[in-house]
Image (cartoon, rainbow, N blue to C red):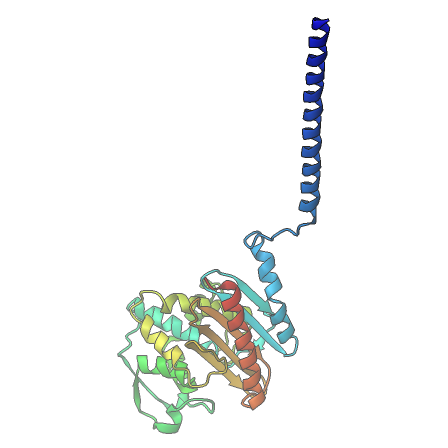
Length: 303
């Protein structure tokens, strides 16, 4: 009798343990299912670094919307990241004076090699006369001599056509065309006076990158060239930061600017257009485009 009672107690206790274990498993399973259900309902937190390219593409929507309102071609490049944005950038325009900056880069490269002497004197002659922009023919008589470095400065800051023609008379065009091609540009765009060439936003963007590399390098004349670009007397692109640029204009074919904007993360901005220019709305349009790219540069690409 005692043995049967003890066996009964043992079986009862064992049953209680099994029942308790089953309850624990059931509770754990319910908890696991509730957890999975709640997890499925919770929104996923995006990884900010997971798809940087998608973020950049999304951020261009505002730029696209603005540029749809204007008949322009645009090239943008952030020099730190190499990120580029293009709008109708293959369209070909009459260049006006924008390529003068690249011709100036070429002459400075000759000076770096000792082929050109920036202190040498060049004489203003009748064959250099031109009815376009500049101050030489307005303020100086034939026979006036100018140091080569002064002609390079006037070629940029005053966009002086006479200065350009004096440079071309001295250094020519053929080797400049070779320089353009060796720099990744289109030598077929170049014409005899440089400022009567062809130009696309892509081509000007390439010019801006090469110029930036030089003026921010350790060249002997890098600072001199940069100072002339910063002293552009006819800026169309605006910024709260310093702008080193070259403009070009002629009615009714061109109103352009190729700029290097010295934001904390510097960038190139090229705007090409076929408009007469000089009206308040022209300046306002370029200012709006400039501001949009400055904001884009700050929000998405600056470190």
